[in-house]
Image (cartoon, rainbow, N blue to C red):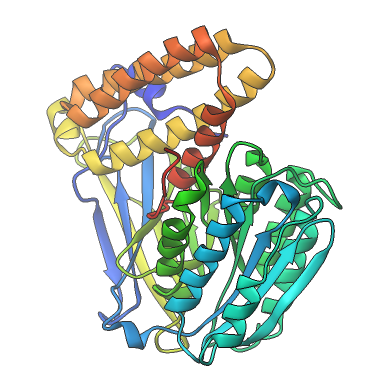
Length: 455
């Protein structure tokens, strides 16, 4: 259940939802952890005397690698579409992009290369890079032919990665490139989502790179999302080498793996749902899982909670979080904890003054991403007016909040969404715009730092 925080506050006449300067919290850590856990609230002060809703932001900050050579080794599979539609400049730039990845790897990294058309061929079985000459020759030999056995290509890439899955030192990743519809073997978004979920459980993430305007963006984004990989919409093949360079930069910057955050809420505080990033809620507990954290980057999850009424001046603990992960730099398990609490006040200015604009904006853009995904579905169902109505309603909520908290950034976002709603109702979504919507929404909810370009 994902109740709109903004609508609730408007109805409660206390402003449209808020966000908070730093929440009252306690963190327990050793000080040299690879990931720093924080719990931030949308407000540290809630209105006294009434049931309220609040947003808890679970922040995971990856520490920067002390030096590039200290990174953990990677176990990477490149899965490259070589179907007939990849002819010409596309396959040339795909080879160039793969060679760019190869040039960034160290001799002890493991690389495999799988090419697929109507059939799937392992050009380079999983092996240490060494001097790279044999792998380079195999990449340069890729030629186009046939249809698009996408599912089989990803499955074979994953099989190559599995050869070294038991070695805890390695970061496991599959990078998939495709420019067309999967038309050989399993081919629906649900099929690929299930594959992504299974690989996530094995500690393997799949990054998807959709090239041009002929690929299935629902399939590609769901595969990436379910496996905690990145996703890219690349309109021009000229951008492929740059996109692959940015992606391998992420892969070489992992500081933590198998990341799990468990959050417990005291009796009376009711978790309502995650906003943006997916998670699981069972009773008074919530859990979010990530395959990796990158150095110098923040990943987060947002949870809406219902808070029971309390009297003026009372304090209440809202949540306790426990983080567990594999430290990729030290190759050992690590844990840390954080707590978060609020106080209650009859003074409206105290509530508004406790707002955290960063949490406000994070909530707004993630809630908007969910609304835009729904808008895509409505347009697909030939209901552009309903899609535009949903976007306008979200813009009204954001603008109301922007006025209450003098949030210029949020006001600009609301204005942009109003214009976008008008355009969508008038023109619908083009193929390119639909692909951009899907990619951008997935990038937003996963906090993807390297987003490429669809220009």
